[in-house]
Length: 389
Image (cartoon, rainbow, N blue to C red; front, side, top):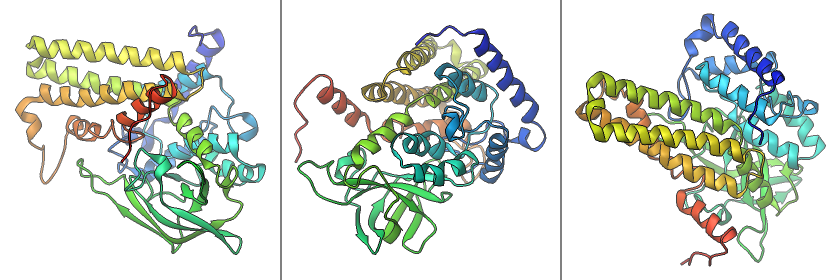
């Protein structure tokens, strides 16, 4: 990927920077820095309004083709958009799962009818989505899902349970991996279904996290229904569609994530300077290592953007997840004994305490480190598959 910015790219950077400066004012100014991993509860309705304001001015789904309602930005311009959005400390968007995952999946694999039905409402932020992948017995091992669906009277009838479903309590729809047939291999017979959440057959139970928040959920399907034509790809061939979605999940927007990481690292450095921890040579060494690691993450992300997000996606996950988890550990080392007490009762965590607690899950969600290593070992290095009980 050519990392040299053209005059057109720099003009685009000025455009988005100026627009954010002019619009993150008034009631929207109070939303700066709100939301994100472990903090999705913050001003959700207000952030939804902000997302719709973005959409009304053409700033949603910027990487989508113009014929599907996007701006058709180049990869480098998408990088610029996400970086400037993060640098402006704009609030975390609530439409990520629809805009970054389901939308591109429908563009790649969906029928024209599915695209016409769902894409405009994602662009306008009129329908929110969640992801029905993980199950209690099939977390990172997606091929082992046991949720089942059968055709009955022109509809899919779905029974099973999903877990760690982000923002299910706010979602209108869920893209669900369910077993609709059998095959010679575990990933055969899976289908990728689009399921409405507001129906009697769907029950949502929020999961209380270490951070005291509940952005993850359990979702129970008990005779839930969706129309027969709301299967993406062919019935029983949903594995390739699901893998496509995971590739989109680790695309351009992860570079904005690294801007947020930089802001967190800066907060750790500021605390170390204020409380004297910076005088400790071991702490200084860890801060320097964190800084170098973050620069490497960005360069790696840029280098791999123009390639297929297959194995590269697994490598990227293996790089950023341990880095971010170690940043949480560094934050607590810098905080010292103050990191063990809350600022206010009953459980008022500081941002760095929330960083530490939530980042413990980084190496688990989105595909655990063990699964990512297996993918690389088996598909790239040709090593024998891991023995299974």
